[in-house]
Length: 324
Image (cartoon, rainbow, N blue to C red; front, side, top):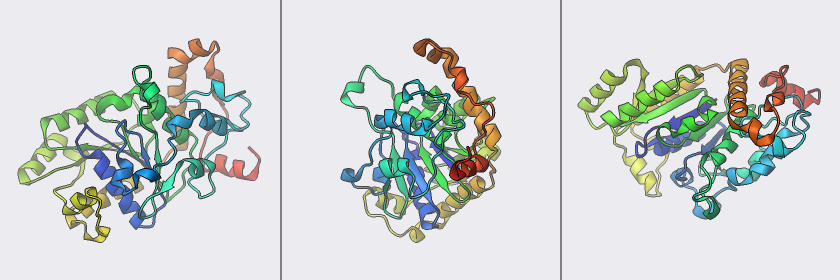
C-alpha cells in the first residue's frame, strides 16, 4: 500500500511521514520511505546520519529509465522514456524485496529497519535552469513500475502545498494524508488540494497537527467533517526524536499512537484496483505526450502504451515465470 503525506510548508508533514514510517517498521511491516520534497529532511527525521544518505534517485534517471524499460519492444532506448512512460510487456517490474536492484542501488536502512530512498537536492548546475519535478519524475516512473504486494508499504513525503499537481505523481497513492494545522491557511491548503484533484483518482483524508486544545479540535471537525481522520497534539516523543534522541515508540503518547492506528486502518481498508491505477498512468502519459513530449522527441509517444498490459500480481507472476 502507498501513502503520501502532503500539506503546506511547516505543517509537520515530514515529521508525520517519519513517525508513520517508524510506526510501520515497529509493527514489523516492510516499509520504504521516499523523500520527494524539495527540502530533503526525511532521512534526518528517521535518524539517518548525513554520511549515510542514499544515492539520489533523481540524479540517476538515465540508469533508472534503462533498467525499467527492460526488454519492452515499444521502448527502443532509454532516450525515449519519460517520467510517465507506462510499463508494458517486457518492462522490468520492481519489487520491495531484498534482491531488487533499484533498492540495492538507491535505498539504505534506517534505525528500526525501514528503508529510505531520496529524490535528491538541487545540484549547483540545476539552479536557474531546471525544475524540481525533473527529480520527482523519477519517483513517478518508479512507482508506475512497482509491484508492491499485500502487507508492504511505501510512505512518500511530498512537496509542499499545491506544487504536487505539477505532475501525475499525486495520483500514485492508495491514500493521501494532508497534514493540517488548525488554522485558516491549513484548511485552505486542504480545499485547494481537494479542488485540484477533482476528477482524478485520489483518496484524500486529513490529519490535524499541532492540536493544542478542544477549540483546535472543534475547529478542525467543523471545517473538515468526515475528511478528518485523526489529530496529533503536542508530543514530547517527537520533540526528543527531532533532537536526535528518539525513545522506543511504545512511549509515544496514547492519543498520538491512536492517530497512527487510524491512518493504518484507513490504508489497510483500501483495495487497489490495478486496472484503474494503470488507466491513470496511461492518462497522464498521454497528457504529457500531447503537451510537450511528442514535440520534443519528434514522434508520437502514445505508441509506448501497451493496450494489452495491466500491472499487478498477474503481470508480476508472468515476469517471474519468464512468460511475459
